[in-house]
Length: 154
Image (cartoon, rainbow, N blue to C red; front, top):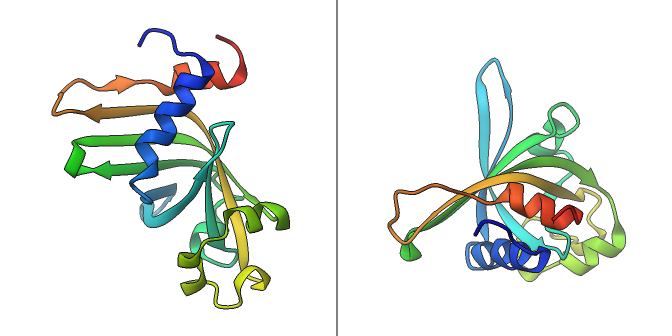
């Protein structure tokens, strides 16, 4: 895995996140330390961005403008696969993208559906990651490769 094409890097990211829909999203540190919350992944797009639906007034959303460096952790113990993604997050208010990412599970949090005034998006642009799989103790770093592949610098 010395050098991945953009297609290989994106395939790996999507493959490792598709079956683990709930991730732990960790936001910036304050006097009480970092904060992690379970968050449902809405999508990993063709550019490698990770998307979440969120409440615009939630503590997570309020922390985005202050500290946009985040970590997203996926755990799939059944398959012995673990993924930790580090990147930059931003809030996006895009009606078309909301419609694209909407799913029935989201209605539990946004009872007014796509018209819920609290509904907004978090987009995370990954810049590095580590993964562990198949009972290996080896830590594999791949997002530097993914970042290069996604940016076309491969």
